[in-house]
Image (cartoon, rainbow, N blue to C red; front, side):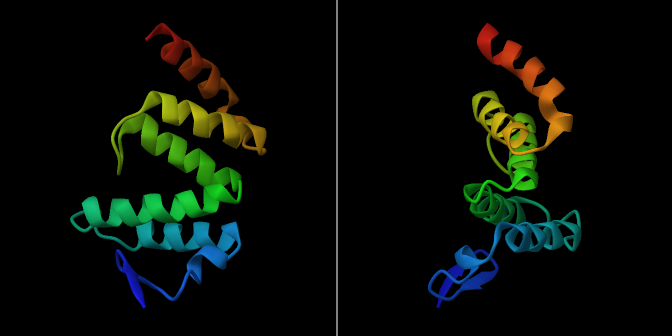
Length: 111
């Protein structure tokens, strides 16, 4: 048994779940954490789970990762990484982020 944050992974079992299940686990973790808990440990677990779902091109996970990188939530602020995730999210059906993608593209290219 391998401990990854608060989740015990049994030889990659979590990684084998379909992305909507992984995203729901991450979502439950976020919504069931008190503000004091939602600091470094919870944020690392969220990023880990969201990246697993994003590897399966889950639009919601891609979008949330983009927001976290854009705002430096749970990770260092990284507009280039945010742009990459927003682009992938838009490419996978998250239409509401296309305007933000255009704005961020301009910001990234100015730097």
